[in-house]
Image 1: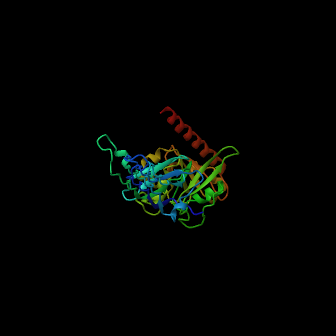
Image 2: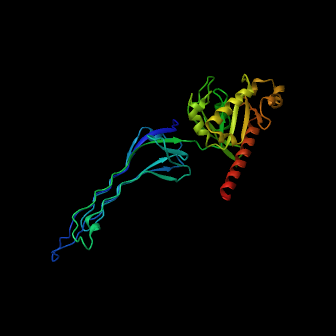
Image 3: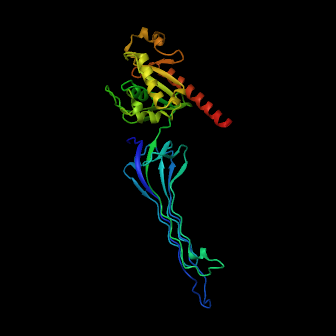
Length: 343
């Protein structure tokens, strides 16, 4: 299934039903009082997080969603039937924006989260509502309120534990396909990854984490160049960052600094996350040089950066990489849970 992470739809809530002007017409009751019922409320449009969905594909070609109108009030003080609600199901991690103003309406993060994005119009009051000591026979009723119509943008931000950061052709897709069941496109040319891909990485029988293979970024990605904003939007949801830098890079340190710069310019808070550097494609080195690689290139990186030499093709260093990432993810989740509990 094609991954779709951004769609624009139009939603319309239902109009409220009109109130009724009616009077009692019963035998032996020559002056029956008002008996007009209220109109029903219009249906509303909701967004709900469904854990079984992973893409916005269902909404890509079905872009108009209308809730039902409320029925008019009836005689004998009968209230009209409410209009049918519309519930649009989306993957957890979906952000909802007003496409006209770009204002964020809200987001649904946890499974079952529900957000009303267009509220149905209220039903009008029937003439019974207006009866008073000074107006025994009111001859007017309210019309129902109009519903709302909005153009809504839905943006899916992936919920992953580890996000891969790197320039095109750094080996990210090969890494994900080597340590998980995900099958992103792999080729020997840049920008083979055009849409995000999630892979479940199993460390052992009982421990695992989710890794996100995201489109590669280029210089000035934070300004929207290339697929930059698509990539940066997804990286917000990850707990740990893994920078993938091939040993064939002309300048390892400059490559790392440029990746940091793009993250910083987009959202400096992303640099507070635990991060590691995977030195990829070490199968291109002679075996005697591979174990020495972290010490040899350490001068190109800050001292607090942990370097993990790997080769996804030759299956070198993948076990230690998975264990190290899992420990970082587990630590980060425990820290976040402790902060939530203490607050």
